[in-house]
Image 1: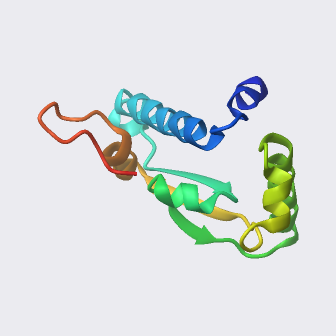
Image 2: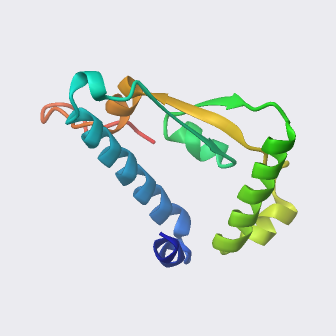
Image 3: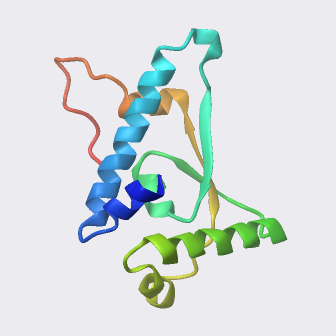
Amino acid sequence: MNERVRQLATDGWQTAGWREGRADLAALAAWARHRPPDARPVAYTATTILLPLAVRAGFEVHPRPRTWWARLEDWHYRSLLRRWNPKGTERLRHGHGRLRSADIWLSAAGLEAHYGERDPGSASGPIY
């Protein structure tokens, strides 16, 4: 995984990373579609500091209580940003506001709607 991140961390990394993330979500939707109905997840959840990207990908954002654990995770996520993003240190110094984590959530129906197979006669998919 780190090697793949290193490959993406070039000029234009945002576009490449966005494509990779959308491909991962499409693969997750395909995986869920082929599971028996009673074994399919009903929702997907994560924690991230990349909130604008999560919203753009279709996730709902829910603020987290500012516990010591959340603050520790925020520090960890910012250290990952500093390490793997070519402009991470600059972003942390000159960004718009503090990068605080939030919980993100996407229903199984939402995942399928955004990233599932398309009817050949339908539009090419959502605009994101």
